[in-house]
Length: 412
Image 1 (cartoon, rainbow, N blue to C red):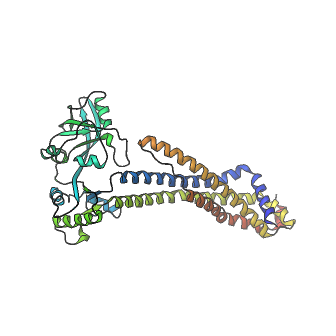
Image 2 (image 1 turned 90 degrees about the vertical axis):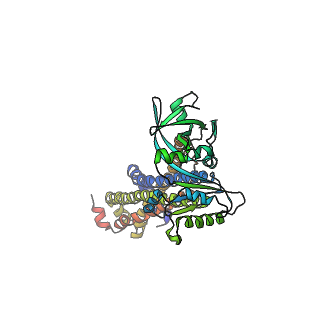
Image 3 (image 1 turned 45 degrees about the vertical axis):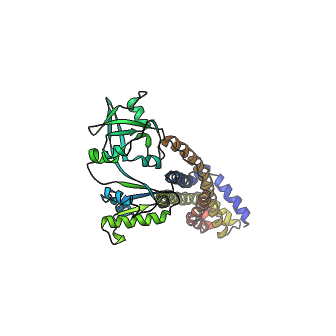
């Protein structure tokens, strides 16, 4: 039989039971739309984080304690106490590292902050004015603390805009005192509203001298990170290499494989972000792909039911000259058409859901979450859905093709 006639017969068969056809393609629609949405949202997240990493300046280096994470179990190294003030002093010496403009240690502490009867949870960032420049956060009221405050371990604070609004409302916060862990901190500045970032929320952050946080809040003498700003025109790779040599000497390390720190450039950070997002997206895609398999099994079951219900039709067609090959192709075409339609509908719904998700996430995070439609995923998804129909439609089509015409015509 001509392929055109078989195609027409397959379409007629699908139209004869629209409810069953809808249920058949539903699983495919869900699977493809989930894949499109996951890939679009993942790409949007990656672009947002990369944009913020790039905003931290190409001339910045980040030194973290512990070994460089290569897997989930390595992240325990983040809590290492290997970075101390002697390292900062060593890095500031031109004889050790040339091209360093400024070094800014950083410690992080999280706790509640109170003012009179108001209480709020906040992140306390112990650092220097360098961190404000790198993260591009500005003081709109008052001023930032200075090097003398750091030396004196002064209990002064620069607060984020949301903390200011929640604790003080329209009242001027400059000169007022807030309490953190029972200690009073004098407010010397208020940060401009910046909005939520993927890894830093300036509006809910309190910035204080790192020496103050170490002395009164953490009770330790090590840093969670050291930020190094490199002079314009300096070779980043050379500076990174000199930093590694200097820290090894400071820590008494002779074997680079035993480093208790790692240095990351902006490119390193961007590469890690891409790797992490790629892994997470892949894991989510595997979960979404399972729904395609489930949809394929559903297709096979419904097609088997369809074969059982249409035994008499099969017998009649064979009696009129249809071959086993014709019957096989007809039922395969039905499965492929249904899943192909499901794939196209899934792509359209996936694009719609991706756009809605981008708008919701932009509003929730206060950051422009870009909408990105993965055309490659749309093409692959449609093809995969058709292949799923072909694979899971083979057995029901084979069962239909092998029906004996005489027995089929006798079927009630």
